Length: 598
Image 1 (cartoon, rainbow, N blue to C red):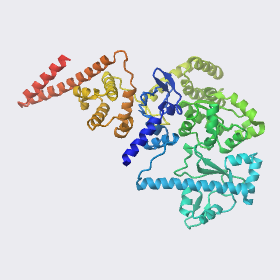
Image 2 (image 1 turned 90 degrees about the vertical axis):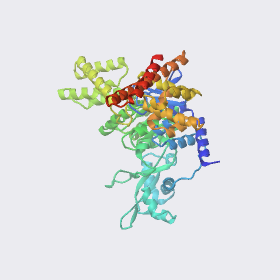
Image 3 (image 1 turned 30 degrees about the horizontal axis):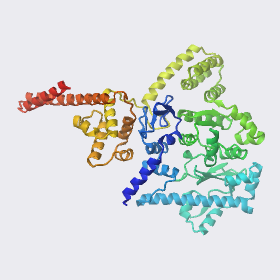
Image 4 (image 1 turned 90 degrees about the horizontal axis):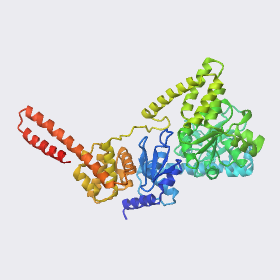
């Protein structure tokens, strides 16, 4: 069997085993309406669902940003990977073996680099863990974890470790095992000076392995255990396997609990997450102290749409919460905020008050708007004109995002009373805010995603083209008839020209048109438009007549365009004294007759 045949069989097996509704539902909250499902698009910021999935056709399409395609196209967009990487990702989830094929030199080098780094991180994880648990060098680390009330079970569960207070213990140990200095340097575990002198990146720190959602160690966090001038926390540098934007600490251990409890708790640092897990609160993950990212949000929403933020209660933590809320809510998450009293962080609170007290905080978690309102009012002086203006300016975008009119009205009244600002002024400002927001949503890209909101072409000719493409895609014999009436290159929509040309070429070569083949051969714009065509709703009561009307409309456009072209040419030839104008007039008369007979 040829390599191409093996590849095609593999892709088809993965496609036929994939449930597009189940896959997309793990990322997007969908509701059924008729024969399709709707939700807020994960690829652009929207409050009114325009993202549609038609399971029986195997396609999704967003009527806002025009993203569309099959299950693999969705995975490639949502996971930010190539189309074929998306196929492999889905195969792994379905436990379908990935066939081997001959890779080029670059692919071999990249795969080798990734495998080498994963292996060395696994070895380093064992090195740090064994140092902590089995050697005298690990005594300072054991003392530190004891004072933080981290017991041996949690140490084992998270594979916690200790980097000894020696310059090159890991380096010399790994060199004896035959691991090259170059690989140790690329991993970020070792720094090598221009002089050739090498020293360990992590020294005299407790070590927290950072794993991806599959449990593979991809980096480390080290916390200093004395009062030296060194940074309190030190993370691995970015490598091909370690990028903090795409990682959530503890997700590999928390994902089961997140699914069962149907919400995730997001904290700032890994010690917060470790402490919550040690008290049985196992649906907690940490954003590694970095700003909460769109990629992290998407990872959580594969397991639940409900995200509870529990950042530190100091000013920096609250500001970080506001930023995180904006990202999560704009991507369709249902967000709440767990407020820690007395300026504490989750680690301090749960150790002082216990799990039951923390669960009580969860029960009192504030809805998105309530937290945002309190935050703004707390950070302005409502007794001054400047403070009132600042508060109103900050609250307008938040009010504009409330879709429920009753809820929005209640907040308007409340803001008016607290700030002493007339309700009419607030409502007037809100109206202007909504107008500006509508313009921005229509004309600009979402800050978190490059996809733009583009008004759809809903003219009759475009809709007619979509109807005919859908008909030709699903019914044998229709394509030949359509193209005999209107040639592919004469369709007014250039994307339709590309789609129909592709279909005709496949038909001539006796090849089937499939979603997988189309994804490989069509441009991205044409493939998205094909998705639109295939999810387009057409009248079911008089399908034959509707199709005939669409074809007649496009035929009339084709003939009219051709008539005008030959009429202008005839006029030009006649004015220049060229006798060929007679031939052109005959063509225009023939076209006119065809138009009159339609």
